[in-house]
Image (tube, rainbow, N blue to C red):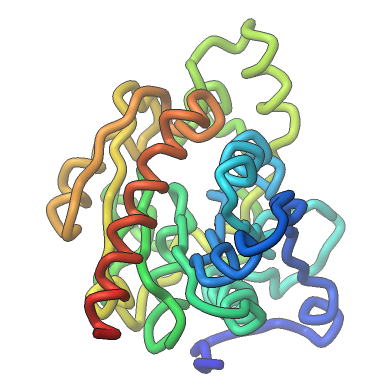
Length: 277
């Protein structure tokens, strides 16, 4: 796999990372071979989130005969007793790179919000990435970091954690419909975990999206801070899609979001077929 600069993973961290697979699509006969040729969707959650946020989308894609994988990013800290140096963006990029290495065949990588940063780092030089999809995500260039994009200067120390509820930067409900009294929003908000400060500020060293076909997806009702920069980020992409929903559109509108991914998959397959002629 491609080496990731600046990684601080301890042996225990590297052995504990995991990818999560949806159940294989239920098919029979000749369809098995056809599905094996399709790219796998590698779904990467944003900051504070886990693989759980993609469960509804995975069910839709599974019903359409596609394989999916997700990852748990190390910068989303579930054990708040963990000691420094805590994992950061480069460590997340390593996890994504490992997941790509473990896939059979090509991948369409879906990056949400913060995870656009480590995805950008990880897909650089990865031979099996057919397409990168940035969903209300940070599609950064070399030297850029997530919070620096909002004009926040990097602190002297990158130690520490940022809680999901941070009035200066974000409120949990803004990841969803903005209504903390909504049962589904309350349920999702309760599952959020702290994010490392290191991940907030570490900067891109390789802009992988420049070397692979890519798309940007803008949700119609993004209430998060990322919503203030999606239009400028989208200007960097090859193709731009607009979907209903809030900052996490695959959570609120999995069917509509899946339709975008299926379109991208079909266009990717057409390109690959033309190249093989």
